[in-house]
Length: 85
Image (cartoon, rainbow, N blue to C red; front, top):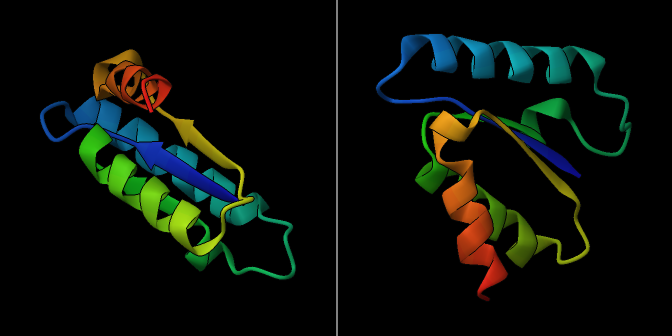
């Protein structure tokens, strides 16, 4: 399992929010088989999130990944892209 908090390269407020989400996920992580350092990611763009998700899926095809960010982070673009795969 993984959490990917997506911020923004151009909006510092969105980036701070995503950073807080990642910090909260790390501090609340309960999976004893996987370190939060290896499962909680903080990135600054949808493209970075896409790269991480594909890396996770390649290594662990049954993983569940939660992407968290605002529409301004570009996550809707990823949803549309993945829907066409």
